[in-house]
Amino acid sequence: MPRLRVIFLDQAAASGGYNVVLWADVPVARQSFYANAAATSAWLGAQAADNTALQNGSVVEQVTPHVFPPGTNISQIESYLQNQWQNFQDHITNYNPWLHYGSTWDGTTWNLVTNG
Image (spheres, rainbow, N blue to C red):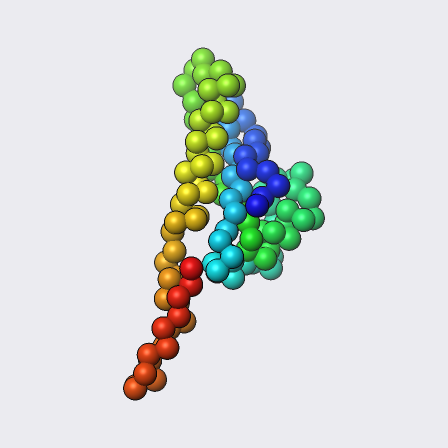
């Protein structure tokens, strides 16, 4: 599980929004598809263990801008971002385009791989 889930980056004064980092847990069977040895967080405060989790694919990061109407208070923003994190986590948990990645047929027999 990621150490943190939502991280504010910078505030875009003109739009009234924020750039936000979301970290989600990747199911074990799919971590190799998310692994990237060169990955580092967009957040400068990320610890070595955070970057290692991004590199080995156990955590995935998404950086997105979020714009809020004038007068939106911080509690409303926090609640909204918690929901955005849950949507992101649900997507990472449920989206699996690699379900049968690596399955092969040698002309006679199928070797069907299931990547949970």
